[in-house]
Image (cartoon, rainbow, N blue to C red; front, side, top):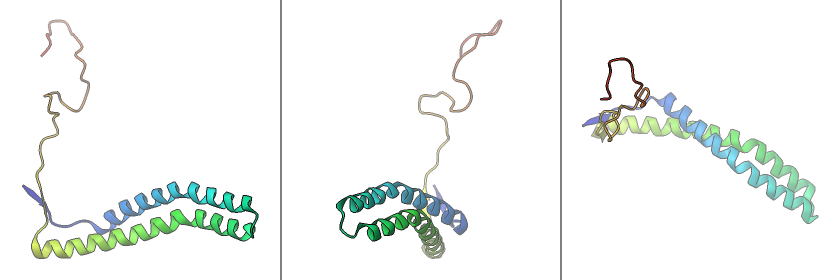
Amino acid sequence: MQSIQSIDIRSCAKIVGATYGAMGLLFCPLLLIAALGGVLSGDNSGVNAVGALLLALLLPILYGGLGFLMGALGAWVYNIVASTVGGIQIELRDTASPSGFPTGGSLLWRPTPGSSPQ
C-alpha cells in the first residue's frame, strides 16, 4: 500500500479550475436558449436577453475561477488533514493488462526471417 501524503496545491487548482471552466462552457447553450425564449416571449425581453447573454459569457470564467480557488482550498485542507491523520491509502499495480499483453507498443506480431510467434 502507498499513501498520498500531500497534493500540490497549484496543480490541483489548475485541474479543478479547468474542469469547472469546461462545465461552465457546457451550461452556456442552456442560458442562450433561455435568453432566446425570453426574446420570443415579448415581455421586457431585451433586458432579460442581455442579462442572460452576459451571464452566458461570464459563466465559464466564473466557474473556472471559483473552481481554481476551491481546488486550491481543498488541496490545502487535504494536506493539513493528511499530515495529521495520514494520507489516503491506495494500492498500485503494474500497468500490464489483465490479458497478459503489454499495454505499450504494437500488439501485432510481424514475422521476421527465423522468428516465431511468442
